[in-house]
Length: 108
Image 1 (cartoon, one colour):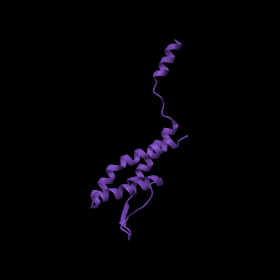
Image 2 (cartoon, rainbow, N blue to C red; image 1 turned 30 degrees about the horizontal axis):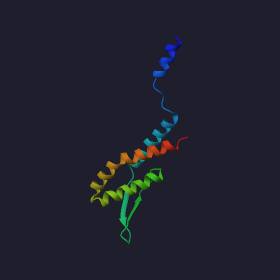
Image 3 (cartoon, one colour; image 1 turned 180 degrees about the vertical axis):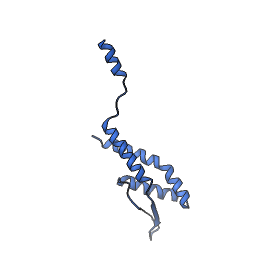
Image 4 (tube, rainbow, N blue to C red; image 1 turned 90 degrees about the vertical axis):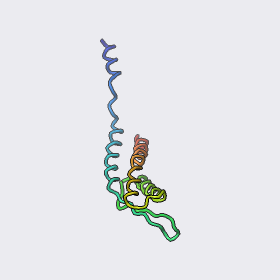
């Protein structure tokens, strides 16, 4: 009888940890913010690309990566707003995956 109870406990799926739940909730909130951000890209007097965002995602590293991604899309040939948006949107899952890993590593 005890063996049966132990075996049943062993096959029960582990409940998601509180830390993972916190990370996933944060990812959802930041992801929603990310979808509402606009990046403005230009060039300075030396011909270097500049980038600014109309608001923050709440994570400075993600904001920096979003600017870098936008500039890379333009360098790779995306010329109009629609092409740039499509290029950046295609990269957003990678940006969020990296953020998820960073947040998981930062949990105690």
